[in-house]
Image 1 (tube, one colour):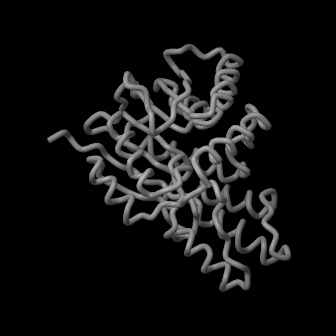
Image 2: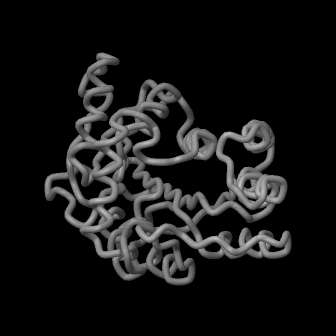
Length: 274
């Protein structure tokens, strides 16, 4: 799909679902795992009481920003998205919550054309943003643009989909007698070899990865379909149970369930300028 088609897709969802989570994802459980992974990673880096500046590019209708603000009330958050309707929804929620600008702000911007006056932040976040660029070259270019807004010694956290772990998930499906899945046409999953090389060019050091969704995805995309005539059921009680268990176990030990989740967290540190 071309870039305009990808934008049209998200604009359609933004208009249809407004402030609802469904504007950005089908899975309530997957979002719970993403937010949990972000919270744990951020707290490990900065703690909960520091006054850190955070930028999320591709913020959608603001779900992550609002959830993170609850967990880190002393932080300030800026959310940017290229779909105006997404930002309208985020601003609507902000108004309902009566949150001041010094705590959270939203604006319209494309990751490929970030504002020239955009600040430098302690932390920059993406969550299934870069997979909406339709070539690996554009993904690498976008990482370079984002890295310019991370202060030296600061961090960038990306939650993006990986072909490496997706292939493992599909192998499990095939072994279970299920057909391999294919990504949506508006998504291009990470080619990690190229992405990691791009991180280095952007003066970002890959510090760690976390496969926080492995058990969830094995249950959702393999075990439930095995019991359900091949049908994926986002609301199946086993999926909720797998989510709860994953969050509980991850609080003590990361990556306990292997590398089968299509979402992967990449924790990167910005190196000092030469």
